[in-house]
Amino acid sequence: MLELLLWFALLSLLSVGGISTILPEMHRIVVEANGWVSAAEFTQLFAVSQAAPGPNVLIASLIGWKVAGFTGALVALAGICLPAAALAWWVGGLWERFRDAPWRALVQRALLPVTVGLVFAGGYVIATPAGLDWRSALIACASAAALYATRLNPLWILGGGGVAGAALFG
Amino acid sequence: MHAKLTPPRSAVEVFTGFLSIGARAFGGVLPWAHRVMVEERRWLAPRDFSEMLALCQFLPGPNIVNMSVVLGRRWFGLRGAAAGFLGLMALPFVWVLLLAALYADWASHPAVRAVVSGVGIAGGGLFLGTALKLGRPLASRPVALALVAGCFVAVGLLRVSLLIVLPVAVVLALLGARGRLL
Image (cartoon, rainbow over all chains, first blue to last red; front, side, top):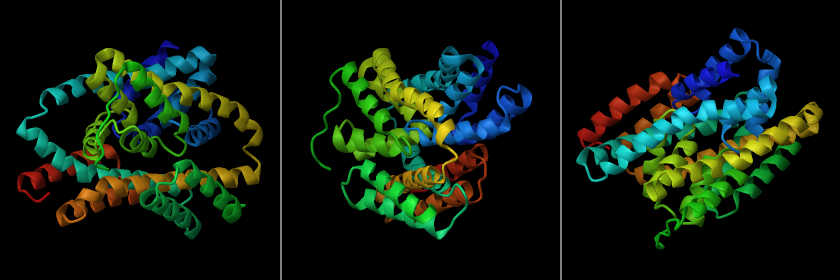
């Protein structure tokens, strides 16, 4: 379990942009190097962590669960989250301290387009799990438009996606 | 959107706010974080949210988890950071374990798979809609839009690793910002 903690702590510090960046490396460590879960189980756990609400890092707690039950789940989640959270704590402090520095305004102006591009990319990747086809494009564009143009609760939009999924993929 | 901001008054409020994000974060956390913090509770101005997201996107770790720590710290120090982090993670942690227990029995059912795919794709759509909201201030700036498109193509379509795309994009963006193009 200590090994689990250390490996995940290492992954935590590499996970710039979230879980998708480290997924291949996590697969290598968890499946190939240590044999904690099989490749098929890994894919299934990933699907569950995607389907559940919340950050996708929760795949770490599912792997921890397979290795050592509830304690394993907590330990794995701590390993994958805390090093990055500690770094965020420290950088966040610096960021607030330089609130009025001219370079901060410059950095913010520079980062906004990059951030928006990455959020678009994230949406595209999530919306096309099996490649781009007209059905997924239809569902994704309709829900994007509904979120942008209406004040509808997003739960309704997701529900609509479920109904559309049943009609189009069923 | 111009109504007065109402930042949280206590660490407990930070906890419940992030709890309500985590509780409903089907299809991704970011759209819900934006909705709760900017639209429902008015903790942050839209611009402040974008800036926070930009910072947190570039740190390792999931961006909204980072945001819970950075914002919690800003408002109530270590107590606030812990409240934000635990609030955000508490319910998803329970959900995912429950779902894993159920999933084994239901995963092979084609109707269940179809519904789950539909929800997942709509979740992706929520990201696209949130990107539109965040990008609204950029609409009249062609260089910024080119950068948005470049990042989208590299990461979304070509699936280039962020460890490569981020440094390149940030350098280009900083040059653009210095030259007053962004």
